[in-house]
Image (cartoon, rainbow, N blue to C red; front, top):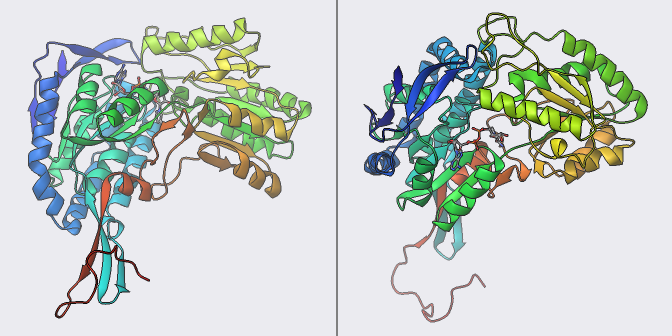
Amino acid sequence: MRDIHHFISGDAHKGSSGRFHEIFNPNTGDVQARVQLATAEEVGNAVEAAKAAFPKWATINPQRRARVMFEFKRLVEANMDELAEMLSSEHGKVIADSKGDVQRGLEVIEFACGIPHLQKGEYTEGAGPGIDVYSMRQPLGVVSGITPFNFPAMIPMWMFGVAIACGNTFVMKPSERDPSVPLRLAELFMEAGAPAGVLNVVHGDKVAVDTILTHPDIKAVSFVGSSDIAQYVYATGTAHGKRVQAMGGAKNHGIIMPDADMDQAVKDLVGAAFGSAGERCMALPVAVPVGEKTANELRERLVTEIEKLKVGISTDKDAHYGPVVTAEHRDRIANYIQMGVDEGSELVVDGRDFSLQGYEKGFFIGPTLLDHVKPNMKSYQEEIFGPVLQLVRADSFEEAVALPTNHQYGNGVAIFTRNGHAAREFAQRVQVGMVGINVPIPVPVAYHTFGGWKRSAFGDVNQHGPEGVRFFTKVKTITQRFPEGATDDSAFVIPTMA
Ligand code: NAD
Protein backbone atom coordinates (compact mmCIF):
# COMPACT_ATOMS: atom_id res chain seq x y z
CA MET A 1 0.00 0.00 0.00
CA ARG A 2 1.40 3.40 -1.03
CA ASP A 3 1.70 5.80 1.92
CA ILE A 4 1.36 9.54 1.28
CA HIS A 5 3.71 11.47 3.55
CA HIS A 6 3.95 14.94 5.04
CA PHE A 7 6.42 17.46 3.58
CA ILE A 8 8.21 19.50 6.22
CA SER A 9 11.26 21.69 5.68
CA GLY A 10 11.79 20.19 2.25
CA ASP A 11 11.79 16.55 3.42
CA ALA A 12 9.29 13.73 3.35
CA HIS A 13 8.05 12.81 6.84
CA LYS A 14 6.37 9.48 7.34
CA GLY A 15 4.16 10.54 10.24
CA SER A 16 3.79 8.81 13.58
CA SER A 17 0.09 9.03 14.50
CA GLY A 18 -0.73 5.53 13.33
CA ARG A 19 -3.92 7.08 11.90
CA PHE A 20 -4.58 6.98 8.15
CA HIS A 21 -7.24 7.94 5.64
CA GLU A 22 -7.88 5.65 2.66
CA ILE A 23 -7.53 7.13 -0.82
CA PHE A 24 -9.82 5.54 -3.39
CA ASN A 25 -9.64 5.19 -7.13
CA PRO A 26 -13.20 6.46 -7.80
CA ASN A 27 -13.28 4.67 -11.20
CA THR A 28 -12.89 1.22 -9.66
CA GLY A 29 -13.82 1.77 -6.02
CA ASP A 30 -10.47 0.26 -4.95
CA VAL A 31 -8.30 1.71 -2.22
CA GLN A 32 -5.12 2.84 -3.98
CA ALA A 33 -3.15 4.50 -1.16
CA ARG A 34 -3.43 5.79 2.37
CA VAL A 35 -2.53 9.17 3.74
CA GLN A 36 -1.02 9.90 7.13
CA LEU A 37 -3.20 11.96 9.48
CA ALA A 38 -0.94 14.33 11.40
CA THR A 39 -0.62 14.65 15.16
CA ALA A 40 -0.65 18.10 16.78
CA GLU A 41 3.10 17.72 17.26
CA GLU A 42 3.66 17.11 13.53
CA VAL A 43 1.66 20.22 12.66
CA GLY A 44 3.82 22.04 15.23
CA ASN A 45 6.96 20.80 13.46
CA ALA A 46 5.69 22.21 10.16
CA VAL A 47 4.96 25.56 11.84
CA GLU A 48 8.49 25.56 13.34
CA ALA A 49 9.99 24.92 9.88
CA ALA A 50 7.94 27.76 8.39
CA LYS A 51 8.87 30.06 11.28
CA ALA A 52 12.57 29.34 10.80
CA ALA A 53 12.33 30.07 7.06
CA PHE A 54 10.34 33.30 7.46
CA PRO A 55 12.94 36.00 8.36
CA LYS A 56 15.08 35.33 5.30
CA TRP A 57 12.22 34.76 2.86
CA ALA A 58 10.42 37.92 4.03
CA THR A 59 13.42 40.10 3.30
CA ILE A 60 14.54 38.62 -0.02
CA ASN A 61 13.83 41.23 -2.66
CA PRO A 62 10.45 40.73 -4.35
CA GLN A 63 11.92 40.12 -7.80
CA ARG A 64 13.72 37.07 -6.44
CA ARG A 65 10.50 35.78 -4.94
CA ALA A 66 8.82 36.39 -8.30
CA ARG A 67 11.56 34.39 -10.06
CA VAL A 68 10.65 31.35 -7.96
CA MET A 69 7.05 31.81 -9.12
CA PHE A 70 8.12 32.03 -12.79
CA GLU A 71 10.19 28.85 -12.47
CA PHE A 72 7.38 27.07 -10.61
CA LYS A 73 4.99 27.94 -13.44
CA ARG A 74 7.45 26.48 -15.95
CA LEU A 75 7.84 23.28 -13.91
CA VAL A 76 4.09 22.81 -13.44
CA GLU A 77 3.56 23.25 -17.18
CA ALA A 78 6.31 20.72 -17.88
CA ASN A 79 4.61 18.25 -15.50
CA MET A 80 1.04 19.00 -16.58
CA ASP A 81 0.26 15.49 -17.86
CA GLU A 82 1.56 13.76 -14.75
CA LEU A 83 -0.31 16.18 -12.45
CA ALA A 84 -3.58 15.84 -14.39
CA GLU A 85 -3.42 12.03 -14.30
CA MET A 86 -2.65 12.03 -10.59
CA LEU A 87 -5.52 14.44 -9.96
CA SER A 88 -8.04 12.46 -12.01
CA SER A 89 -7.04 9.18 -10.38
CA GLU A 90 -7.91 10.44 -6.89
CA HIS A 91 -10.72 12.91 -7.62
CA GLY A 92 -12.48 11.25 -10.56
CA LYS A 93 -12.80 14.31 -12.83
CA VAL A 94 -11.87 13.74 -16.47
CA ILE A 95 -8.30 14.53 -17.58
CA ALA A 96 -9.22 17.66 -19.57
CA ASP A 97 -11.00 19.03 -16.50
CA SER A 98 -8.01 18.18 -14.28
CA LYS A 99 -5.80 20.16 -16.66
CA GLY A 100 -8.25 23.05 -16.25
CA ASP A 101 -7.93 22.72 -12.46
CA VAL A 102 -4.12 23.00 -12.71
CA GLN A 103 -4.30 25.80 -15.29
CA ARG A 104 -6.68 27.96 -13.20
CA GLY A 105 -4.21 27.64 -10.31
CA LEU A 106 -1.32 28.57 -12.59
CA GLU A 107 -3.15 31.74 -13.57
CA VAL A 108 -2.93 32.82 -9.92
CA ILE A 109 0.79 31.99 -9.99
CA GLU A 110 1.09 34.24 -13.09
CA PHE A 111 -0.65 36.98 -11.07
CA ALA A 112 1.76 36.36 -8.16
CA CYS A 113 4.72 36.80 -10.57
CA GLY A 114 3.79 40.51 -10.52
CA ILE A 115 4.44 40.78 -6.77
CA PRO A 116 7.15 43.48 -7.05
CA HIS A 117 4.49 45.78 -8.47
CA LEU A 118 1.56 44.47 -6.38
CA GLN A 119 3.32 44.91 -3.05
CA LYS A 120 4.45 48.50 -3.67
CA GLY A 121 3.30 50.95 -1.01
CA GLU A 122 2.02 54.51 -1.37
CA TYR A 123 3.91 57.75 -0.92
CA THR A 124 2.84 61.32 -0.19
CA GLU A 125 5.50 63.95 -0.57
CA GLY A 126 5.00 67.06 1.57
CA ALA A 127 2.06 65.90 3.69
CA GLY A 128 3.14 68.73 6.05
CA PRO A 129 6.10 71.07 6.20
CA GLY A 130 9.07 68.85 5.42
CA ILE A 131 6.94 65.80 6.17
CA ASP A 132 6.55 62.81 3.88
CA VAL A 133 4.23 59.86 4.50
CA TYR A 134 4.66 56.42 3.01
CA SER A 135 3.22 52.97 3.52
CA MET A 136 4.56 49.49 3.03
CA ARG A 137 2.85 46.12 2.86
CA GLN A 138 4.71 43.59 4.99
CA PRO A 139 4.12 39.84 5.17
CA LEU A 140 2.33 38.45 8.24
CA GLY A 141 4.66 35.55 9.10
CA VAL A 142 3.59 31.90 9.10
CA VAL A 143 0.21 31.50 7.42
CA SER A 144 -1.86 28.43 6.61
CA GLY A 145 -4.24 27.09 3.98
CA ILE A 146 -6.88 24.37 4.48
CA THR A 147 -8.33 23.11 1.21
CA PRO A 148 -11.30 21.04 -0.09
CA PHE A 149 -11.23 17.93 -2.27
CA ASN A 150 -12.86 19.39 -5.36
CA PHE A 151 -10.01 21.58 -6.72
CA PRO A 152 -6.83 19.96 -5.34
CA ALA A 153 -4.55 22.00 -7.64
CA MET A 154 -6.29 25.35 -8.13
CA ILE A 155 -7.26 26.14 -4.54
CA PRO A 156 -3.84 25.37 -2.97
CA MET A 157 -2.28 27.65 -5.64
CA TRP A 158 -4.84 30.41 -4.92
CA MET A 159 -3.55 30.42 -1.38
CA PHE A 160 0.15 29.61 -1.27
CA GLY A 161 0.86 31.40 -4.57
CA VAL A 162 -0.20 34.80 -3.24
CA ALA A 163 0.86 34.25 0.39
CA ILE A 164 4.41 33.14 -0.41
CA ALA A 165 4.94 35.76 -3.12
CA CYS A 166 4.11 38.36 -0.43
CA GLY A 167 6.96 37.01 1.74
CA ASN A 168 5.01 34.72 4.10
CA THR A 169 5.89 31.10 4.78
CA PHE A 170 3.17 28.50 4.53
CA VAL A 171 1.68 25.40 6.14
CA MET A 172 -0.81 23.67 3.84
CA LYS A 173 -3.41 21.14 5.03
CA PRO A 174 -4.95 19.63 1.87
CA SER A 175 -8.11 17.55 1.71
CA GLU A 176 -7.43 14.05 3.00
CA ARG A 177 -9.48 12.66 0.09
CA ASP A 178 -7.08 13.63 -2.74
CA PRO A 179 -3.80 14.82 -1.21
CA SER A 180 -1.24 13.72 -3.84
CA VAL A 181 -1.41 16.75 -6.15
CA PRO A 182 -0.98 19.39 -3.39
CA LEU A 183 2.01 17.40 -2.13
CA ARG A 184 3.54 17.16 -5.62
CA LEU A 185 3.02 20.93 -6.10
CA ALA A 186 5.00 21.58 -2.91
CA GLU A 187 7.85 19.37 -4.18
CA LEU A 188 7.88 21.26 -7.48
CA PHE A 189 7.86 24.56 -5.62
CA MET A 190 11.07 23.60 -3.85
CA GLU A 191 12.56 22.40 -7.12
CA ALA A 192 11.74 25.90 -8.45
CA GLY A 193 14.12 27.40 -5.90
CA ALA A 194 12.05 28.05 -2.78
CA PRO A 195 14.15 27.53 0.34
CA ALA A 196 13.25 24.60 2.64
CA GLY A 197 10.46 25.47 5.07
CA VAL A 198 8.82 28.12 2.88
CA LEU A 199 6.05 25.68 1.84
CA ASN A 200 5.20 22.72 4.10
CA VAL A 201 2.40 20.17 3.76
CA VAL A 202 0.72 18.33 6.62
CA HIS A 203 -2.09 15.92 5.89
CA GLY A 204 -4.82 15.42 8.38
CA ASP A 205 -8.30 15.79 9.72
CA LYS A 206 -9.87 17.77 12.56
CA VAL A 207 -6.81 17.23 14.78
CA ALA A 208 -4.58 19.02 12.26
CA VAL A 209 -7.17 21.72 11.54
CA ASP A 210 -7.72 22.48 15.22
CA THR A 211 -3.98 22.68 15.82
CA ILE A 212 -3.66 25.19 12.98
CA LEU A 213 -6.59 27.27 14.26
CA THR A 214 -5.19 27.56 17.78
CA HIS A 215 -1.44 27.67 17.11
CA PRO A 216 0.01 30.95 18.43
CA ASP A 217 2.61 31.20 15.64
CA ILE A 218 0.10 31.03 12.76
CA LYS A 219 -1.00 34.54 11.84
CA ALA A 220 -3.64 33.89 9.18
CA VAL A 221 -5.75 31.02 7.90
CA SER A 222 -7.28 30.71 4.47
CA PHE A 223 -9.98 28.03 4.22
CA VAL A 224 -12.19 26.65 1.45
CA GLY A 225 -14.74 23.91 2.08
CA SER A 226 -18.32 23.36 3.21
CA SER A 227 -20.18 26.12 5.09
CA ASP A 228 -20.54 24.57 8.54
CA ILE A 229 -16.80 23.86 8.68
CA ALA A 230 -16.03 27.29 7.19
CA GLN A 231 -18.07 28.96 9.93
CA TYR A 232 -16.32 26.87 12.59
CA VAL A 233 -12.89 27.70 11.12
CA TYR A 234 -13.75 31.41 11.03
CA ALA A 235 -15.08 31.48 14.61
CA THR A 236 -12.23 29.43 16.09
CA GLY A 237 -9.43 31.08 14.13
CA THR A 238 -10.56 34.64 14.85
CA ALA A 239 -11.12 33.77 18.54
CA HIS A 240 -7.43 32.85 18.57
CA GLY A 241 -6.41 36.19 17.13
CA LYS A 242 -5.91 35.15 13.52
CA ARG A 243 -6.93 36.78 10.31
CA VAL A 244 -9.32 34.30 8.64
CA GLN A 245 -10.98 34.03 5.23
CA ALA A 246 -13.28 30.99 5.03
CA MET A 247 -15.12 30.20 1.80
CA GLY A 248 -18.10 27.85 2.09
CA GLY A 249 -20.71 25.98 0.07
CA ALA A 250 -22.94 27.14 -2.74
CA LYS A 251 -26.20 26.66 -4.62
CA ASN A 252 -25.90 28.72 -7.78
CA HIS A 253 -28.90 29.67 -9.91
CA GLY A 254 -29.05 30.15 -13.67
CA ILE A 255 -31.93 32.47 -14.68
CA ILE A 256 -33.24 31.91 -18.22
CA MET A 257 -35.20 34.91 -19.50
CA PRO A 258 -37.75 34.42 -22.31
CA ASP A 259 -35.49 36.35 -24.71
CA ALA A 260 -32.39 34.23 -24.02
CA ASP A 261 -30.47 32.53 -26.83
CA MET A 262 -31.89 29.11 -25.95
CA ASP A 263 -29.28 27.09 -27.89
CA GLN A 264 -26.51 28.74 -25.92
CA ALA A 265 -28.33 28.66 -22.58
CA VAL A 266 -29.09 24.93 -22.80
CA LYS A 267 -25.51 24.09 -23.77
CA ASP A 268 -24.13 26.26 -20.96
CA LEU A 269 -26.53 24.91 -18.34
CA VAL A 270 -25.76 21.29 -19.13
CA GLY A 271 -21.99 21.92 -18.97
CA ALA A 272 -22.21 23.93 -15.76
CA ALA A 273 -24.62 21.55 -14.00
CA PHE A 274 -22.98 18.24 -14.91
CA GLY A 275 -19.32 19.08 -15.60
CA SER A 276 -17.01 17.57 -12.96
CA ALA A 277 -20.10 15.59 -11.79
CA GLY A 278 -21.46 18.81 -10.30
CA GLU A 279 -18.65 18.87 -7.72
CA ARG A 280 -17.85 22.56 -8.24
CA CYS A 281 -18.72 25.44 -5.95
CA MET A 282 -19.44 27.42 -9.14
CA ALA A 283 -21.61 24.72 -10.74
CA LEU A 284 -25.15 25.70 -11.77
CA PRO A 285 -27.41 23.14 -10.05
CA VAL A 286 -30.57 25.31 -10.21
CA ALA A 287 -32.17 26.53 -13.46
CA VAL A 288 -34.84 29.21 -13.18
CA PRO A 289 -36.80 29.59 -16.42
CA VAL A 290 -39.00 32.69 -16.45
CA GLY A 291 -42.52 32.05 -17.79
CA GLU A 292 -44.33 28.80 -18.63
CA LYS A 293 -43.29 28.78 -22.31
CA THR A 294 -39.60 29.21 -21.48
CA ALA A 295 -39.84 26.49 -18.81
CA ASN A 296 -41.48 23.93 -21.09
CA GLU A 297 -39.05 24.56 -23.93
CA LEU A 298 -36.05 24.47 -21.59
CA ARG A 299 -37.14 21.20 -20.00
CA GLU A 300 -37.65 19.49 -23.33
CA ARG A 301 -34.29 20.60 -24.66
CA LEU A 302 -32.47 19.74 -21.44
CA VAL A 303 -33.82 16.18 -21.58
CA THR A 304 -32.54 15.83 -25.15
CA GLU A 305 -29.07 17.12 -24.19
CA ILE A 306 -28.89 15.04 -21.00
CA GLU A 307 -29.59 11.89 -23.01
CA LYS A 308 -26.47 12.62 -25.08
CA LEU A 309 -24.18 12.89 -22.03
CA LYS A 310 -21.50 10.27 -21.65
CA VAL A 311 -20.46 9.31 -18.13
CA GLY A 312 -17.17 7.41 -18.13
CA ILE A 313 -13.94 6.72 -16.31
CA SER A 314 -11.74 9.74 -15.73
CA THR A 315 -9.27 8.73 -18.47
CA ASP A 316 -11.99 8.32 -21.11
CA LYS A 317 -11.38 11.18 -23.56
CA ASP A 318 -15.01 11.11 -24.73
CA ALA A 319 -16.58 11.21 -21.27
CA HIS A 320 -18.29 14.45 -20.23
CA TYR A 321 -17.79 13.62 -16.59
CA GLY A 322 -16.47 10.82 -14.38
CA PRO A 323 -17.26 9.30 -11.00
CA VAL A 324 -17.76 11.33 -7.82
CA VAL A 325 -15.08 11.29 -5.16
CA THR A 326 -16.29 8.56 -2.77
CA ALA A 327 -19.08 6.00 -2.39
CA GLU A 328 -20.25 7.95 0.66
CA HIS A 329 -20.64 11.10 -1.43
CA ARG A 330 -22.49 9.20 -4.17
CA ASP A 331 -24.94 7.86 -1.55
CA ARG A 332 -25.42 11.37 -0.15
CA ILE A 333 -26.32 12.66 -3.64
CA ALA A 334 -28.75 9.76 -4.15
CA ASN A 335 -30.39 10.58 -0.81
CA TYR A 336 -30.94 14.18 -1.91
CA ILE A 337 -32.60 12.96 -5.13
CA GLN A 338 -34.95 10.82 -3.07
CA MET A 339 -35.59 13.75 -0.75
CA GLY A 340 -36.53 15.87 -3.79
CA VAL A 341 -39.03 13.20 -4.89
CA ASP A 342 -40.47 12.84 -1.38
CA GLU A 343 -40.89 16.59 -1.15
CA GLY A 344 -43.02 16.60 -4.29
CA SER A 345 -40.71 17.60 -7.15
CA GLU A 346 -40.98 15.65 -10.41
CA LEU A 347 -38.11 13.29 -11.26
CA VAL A 348 -37.71 13.79 -15.02
CA VAL A 349 -34.36 12.00 -15.46
CA ASP A 350 -33.10 9.63 -12.74
CA GLY A 351 -29.34 8.94 -12.64
CA ARG A 352 -29.33 6.75 -9.55
CA ASP A 353 -29.30 3.39 -11.30
CA PHE A 354 -26.44 4.28 -13.62
CA SER A 355 -23.75 1.59 -13.77
CA LEU A 356 -20.70 1.53 -16.03
CA GLN A 357 -19.92 -1.83 -17.56
CA GLY A 358 -16.61 -3.17 -16.25
CA TYR A 359 -16.57 -0.54 -13.48
CA GLU A 360 -19.58 -1.62 -11.47
CA LYS A 361 -17.85 -0.75 -8.18
CA GLY A 362 -16.90 2.79 -9.33
CA PHE A 363 -18.58 5.80 -7.70
CA PHE A 364 -20.73 6.75 -10.70
CA ILE A 365 -24.05 8.53 -10.76
CA GLY A 366 -25.94 9.49 -13.89
CA PRO A 367 -27.25 12.97 -14.70
CA THR A 368 -30.50 13.75 -12.92
CA LEU A 369 -33.19 16.35 -13.65
CA LEU A 370 -35.90 17.41 -11.19
CA ASP A 371 -38.72 19.75 -12.23
CA HIS A 372 -41.31 21.74 -10.22
CA VAL A 373 -38.83 22.23 -7.38
CA LYS A 374 -40.11 24.77 -4.81
CA PRO A 375 -38.15 27.21 -2.62
CA ASN A 376 -39.48 25.64 0.59
CA MET A 377 -37.98 22.23 -0.22
CA LYS A 378 -34.91 21.14 1.78
CA SER A 379 -33.43 19.53 -1.36
CA TYR A 380 -33.43 23.06 -2.89
CA GLN A 381 -32.19 24.88 0.18
CA GLU A 382 -29.16 22.64 0.70
CA GLU A 383 -26.11 22.00 -1.45
CA ILE A 384 -26.18 18.60 -3.21
CA PHE A 385 -22.77 18.84 -4.93
CA GLY A 386 -23.53 16.21 -7.55
CA PRO A 387 -24.82 15.86 -11.15
CA VAL A 388 -28.35 16.96 -10.27
CA LEU A 389 -30.13 19.88 -11.97
CA GLN A 390 -33.24 21.30 -10.30
CA LEU A 391 -35.78 23.38 -12.24
CA VAL A 392 -37.49 26.08 -10.21
CA ARG A 393 -40.09 27.76 -12.41
CA ALA A 394 -40.57 31.52 -11.94
CA ASP A 395 -43.46 33.62 -13.25
CA SER A 396 -41.57 36.89 -13.49
CA PHE A 397 -38.18 38.57 -13.48
CA GLU A 398 -38.91 39.78 -9.92
CA GLU A 399 -39.55 36.25 -8.72
CA ALA A 400 -36.36 35.07 -10.45
CA VAL A 401 -34.17 37.74 -8.81
CA ALA A 402 -35.67 36.92 -5.41
CA LEU A 403 -34.69 33.24 -5.54
CA PRO A 404 -30.86 33.58 -5.39
CA THR A 405 -31.23 36.73 -3.29
CA ASN A 406 -33.17 34.90 -0.57
CA HIS A 407 -31.12 31.70 -0.68
CA GLN A 408 -28.78 30.98 2.25
CA TYR A 409 -25.84 30.71 -0.17
CA GLY A 410 -24.60 33.51 -2.40
CA ASN A 411 -21.55 32.26 -4.28
CA GLY A 412 -22.30 32.56 -8.00
CA VAL A 413 -25.31 33.23 -10.23
CA ALA A 414 -25.92 33.60 -13.96
CA ILE A 415 -28.56 35.25 -16.10
CA PHE A 416 -29.19 34.35 -19.73
CA THR A 417 -30.77 37.22 -21.65
CA ARG A 418 -30.30 39.49 -24.66
CA ASN A 419 -31.79 42.43 -22.77
CA GLY A 420 -29.04 44.71 -21.46
CA HIS A 421 -31.41 46.55 -19.14
CA ALA A 422 -32.62 43.35 -17.45
CA ALA A 423 -29.05 42.07 -17.12
CA ARG A 424 -27.84 45.31 -15.58
CA GLU A 425 -30.77 45.45 -13.17
CA PHE A 426 -30.15 41.83 -12.18
CA ALA A 427 -26.42 42.35 -11.59
CA GLN A 428 -27.11 45.37 -9.39
CA ARG A 429 -29.83 43.86 -7.26
CA VAL A 430 -28.97 40.20 -6.77
CA GLN A 431 -27.40 39.36 -3.38
CA VAL A 432 -24.64 37.10 -4.69
CA GLY A 433 -20.87 37.64 -4.86
CA MET A 434 -20.08 36.57 -8.46
CA VAL A 435 -22.47 37.21 -11.35
CA GLY A 436 -22.39 35.88 -14.92
CA ILE A 437 -24.25 37.59 -17.76
CA ASN A 438 -24.58 34.92 -20.45
CA VAL A 439 -21.57 33.32 -18.70
CA PRO A 440 -22.53 30.15 -16.85
CA ILE A 441 -19.51 29.80 -14.54
CA PRO A 442 -18.43 33.34 -13.64
CA VAL A 443 -15.20 32.44 -11.83
CA PRO A 444 -13.30 35.74 -11.93
CA VAL A 445 -9.90 35.78 -13.63
CA ALA A 446 -6.87 35.61 -11.30
CA TYR A 447 -6.21 39.35 -11.22
CA HIS A 448 -9.76 40.00 -10.03
CA THR A 449 -10.96 38.37 -6.87
CA PHE A 450 -13.02 35.32 -5.86
CA GLY A 451 -15.60 35.24 -3.09
CA GLY A 452 -19.25 34.65 -2.35
CA TRP A 453 -21.74 36.32 -0.02
CA LYS A 454 -23.92 35.12 2.86
CA ARG A 455 -23.13 31.53 3.98
CA SER A 456 -20.76 31.08 1.02
CA ALA A 457 -17.99 33.06 2.74
CA PHE A 458 -17.05 34.04 6.27
CA GLY A 459 -14.63 36.93 6.68
CA ASP A 460 -14.21 40.17 4.81
CA VAL A 461 -11.51 39.60 2.24
CA ASN A 462 -11.68 37.48 -0.92
CA GLN A 463 -9.27 35.01 -2.48
CA HIS A 464 -6.52 36.06 -4.93
CA GLY A 465 -6.28 39.27 -6.96
CA PRO A 466 -5.58 42.50 -5.06
CA GLU A 467 -7.73 41.28 -2.14
CA GLY A 468 -5.45 38.25 -1.78
CA VAL A 469 -2.44 40.54 -1.46
CA ARG A 470 -4.29 42.57 1.18
CA PHE A 471 -5.23 39.41 3.09
CA PHE A 472 -1.65 38.14 3.27
CA THR A 473 0.02 41.47 4.16
CA LYS A 474 -0.29 44.13 6.82
CA VAL A 475 0.15 47.81 6.19
CA LYS A 476 2.71 49.91 8.00
CA THR A 477 2.52 53.68 7.55
CA ILE A 478 5.58 55.85 8.16
CA THR A 479 5.47 59.61 8.73
CA GLN A 480 8.93 61.11 8.48
CA ARG A 481 10.76 64.41 8.64
CA PHE A 482 14.38 65.42 8.91
CA PRO A 483 14.19 68.92 10.46
CA GLU A 484 17.17 71.21 10.39
CA GLY A 485 17.41 72.50 13.93
CA ALA A 486 14.61 72.64 16.53
CA THR A 487 11.05 73.31 15.34
CA ASP A 488 8.63 75.52 17.25
CA ASP A 489 5.82 72.91 17.28
CA SER A 490 4.26 72.30 20.67
CA ALA A 491 4.96 68.69 21.63
CA PHE A 492 1.87 68.64 23.85
CA VAL A 493 -0.81 69.20 21.25
CA ILE A 494 -2.01 66.54 18.83
CA PRO A 495 -0.33 67.36 15.52
CA THR A 496 -2.78 68.43 12.80
CA MET A 497 -2.46 69.68 9.26
CA ALA A 498 -4.43 72.85 10.04
P1 NAD B 1 -15.13 19.89 3.67
O1 NAD B 1 -15.69 21.02 4.44
O2 NAD B 1 -15.57 18.51 4.01
O3 NAD B 1 -13.51 19.87 3.85
C1 NAD B 1 -12.74 21.02 3.64
C2 NAD B 1 -11.52 20.94 4.57
O4 NAD B 1 -11.97 20.95 5.93
C3 NAD B 1 -10.70 19.67 4.39
O5 NAD B 1 -9.33 20.00 4.41
C4 NAD B 1 -11.09 18.82 5.58
O6 NAD B 1 -10.04 17.99 6.03
C5 NAD B 1 -11.45 19.84 6.64
N1 NAD B 1 -12.47 19.35 7.57
C6 NAD B 1 -13.51 18.51 7.28
N2 NAD B 1 -14.25 18.28 8.38
C7 NAD B 1 -13.68 19.00 9.39
C8 NAD B 1 -14.02 19.19 10.78
N3 NAD B 1 -15.06 18.60 11.33
N4 NAD B 1 -13.22 20.01 11.49
C9 NAD B 1 -12.16 20.63 10.94
N5 NAD B 1 -11.81 20.48 9.63
C10 NAD B 1 -12.57 19.68 8.86
O7 NAD B 1 -15.34 20.22 2.13
P2 NAD B 1 -15.10 19.26 0.88
O8 NAD B 1 -16.17 18.22 0.86
O9 NAD B 1 -13.68 18.82 0.83
O10 NAD B 1 -15.31 20.27 -0.33
C11 NAD B 1 -16.56 20.53 -0.89
C12 NAD B 1 -17.17 21.78 -0.29
O11 NAD B 1 -16.32 22.90 -0.51
C13 NAD B 1 -18.50 22.15 -0.94
O12 NAD B 1 -19.37 22.63 0.06
C14 NAD B 1 -18.12 23.27 -1.89
O13 NAD B 1 -19.17 24.15 -2.23
C15 NAD B 1 -17.06 23.96 -1.10
N6 NAD B 1 -16.20 24.78 -1.96
C16 NAD B 1 -16.32 26.12 -1.86
C17 NAD B 1 -15.54 26.93 -2.66
C18 NAD B 1 -15.64 28.42 -2.56
O14 NAD B 1 -14.73 29.09 -2.97
N7 NAD B 1 -16.71 28.97 -2.00
C19 NAD B 1 -14.64 26.35 -3.58
C20 NAD B 1 -14.55 24.96 -3.64
C21 NAD B 1 -15.34 24.18 -2.82
